[in-house]
Image (cartoon, rainbow, N blue to C red; front, side):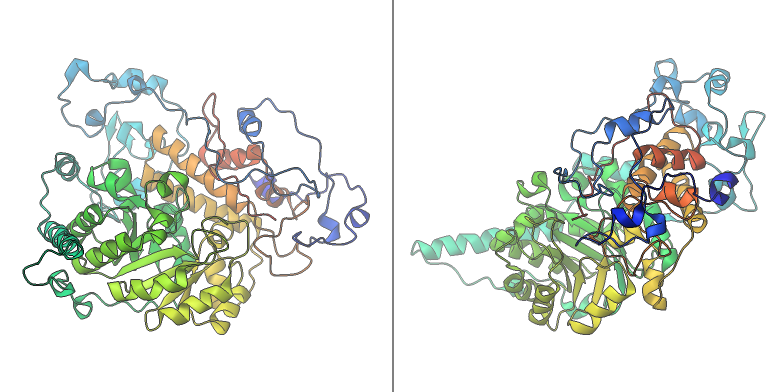
Amino acid sequence: MDDVQGKSTTSSSDCGNAATYPNIEPGVAPIKSEFLRCRPPPRTTTDSSAQATELQKDEPQQNNGSNRKRKRGQNKKRPLTTSIEKGKLLCPKLIADEVCEFGTSCRFLHDVDAFLQSKPPDLGDKCVIFDAYGKCPYGLACRYGSSHVNNKKNVIDEERLRASATKNCMSKEALSDLRKKKIQFPKADAYVKAISAMNDMKNDAAEGRSTIGTLTDEDLITIRPEEKKQINFSNKLFLAPLTTVGNLPFRRICKTFGADVTCSEMALCTNLLQGQQSEWALVKRHESEDLFGLQVCGAWPDTLARLSEYINDRVNVDFVDLNLGCPIDLVFHQGAGSALMGRANKLQQIVTGMSSILSVPLTVKLRTGILAKKSTAHKLIPQIREWGASLVTLHGRSREQRYTKLADWSYINECATAADPMPLIGNGDILSFEDYLEHMNNTNVAGVMIARGALIKPWLFTEIKERRHWDISANERFEFLRKYVNYGLEHWGSDSLGVEKTRRFLLEWLSFLHRYIPIGVLERVPQRINDRPPYYVGRNDLETMMSSTDCTDWVKLSEMLLGSVPTNFQFLPKHRANSYQ
């Protein structure tokens, strides 16, 4: 580890750097000539991470001007993550020192001696969960168990014993009640009934039949705006909801760097109402997240109204965010996400219902429109305001554009004017404090939301608040990777399953994090988010490794923190990272 950090990079062959890149092309990051190198030949390796490179076929960075077509979007046919057979895992009941009701028919292992003999060596002698809470729930299965296991018994430190810092942990009973449809939704049912009555009256009027009385918005609205929890969102730094990579450990990292507002990953409404444990895991909130929202995605007024009532009664959040921006085909074709921007009547019923039931603010995140050449957000936003939303976040691209064009901040400004007096938060292409100041000073937005910029350099929040460029060293960056791993072990578990889950999400993050170009390497600052660098080396071997586009190097970084990968380990990042133009 020390050798990697302290070693200067001098071994790469120089092939006339200045001559190779005499002029910087548009869209190419300006790298100082002393760091430019010719791309080395493909490495041949026999180590356990070789399969990662075999799977990685897309290298958008450092292609030296190649005209080959880059892959875009997601790697939808990724290999499944290798799982551990249940027969090799110690029974959870046994770990918790409880009686297993399945007895000899249990799918898990009950032979403690056999488990300990097959268990891989400990990864360290310090368990972050035990140190933080005085007890490690993974007991004998913990990969750092030497710090709290004595004579095959899990030790508890009574002096340090405290409750978990994670909130919104759903019990098995609560999830079971959702699956078995035991939960009553009186407010949502009344709202759905009112919608049905309104639709009947409209149909009767259209067909010339008389109706008894009129049903107005007063019959639908139960909570007035002044009765809702009030939040001042102005001038706050928002961390965007980020699918897969915007997990709780990553949000904790961003909080340490100065993010003001955090939000969960997008959770699907129907999955939540069906009591899916994996979906409810997205709702968990750390105690450090002092202003936290839950982002939900759905297509139907009735299900979203029921979910709003459930959240209102049982979930600890400061606001609920409705996703109108998700471009994923599966979500779009179900009528949810960005598809709702083209379903105004349905959207009105959804926003009105959710805002009338929730006692916390309802925010809405949307794009400029569905099609690249037909922006519709400026027409929709005033309606969303009238329907009861407290805030809108606008991503300055359409669904069709995804990330292939720069965000349109002039259009974001137009929409911010149309939204007034409702605050609008702008989102798109912020990677420096200059980007932040330019948009805050020259538009009418109330604040900014940071997405890819936070994934590439999470210390961006610090740079913005301190108005400076931070030439963060490779050692410092590695230390917050270590902190992320500790947060991951605390969140996903310190047993073998938790270790590999932490590794997987670390690698997903590294697929973005490697795009950061150190300030000392750049010819000019700041780095632009869509500029791709030519092939370069860092100021030491660790900096070079952290800027590598090779999955093998990411896996090696994970091994420096989490030990060797399992046999037959494979990794291909979810996102193909098509942001380099």
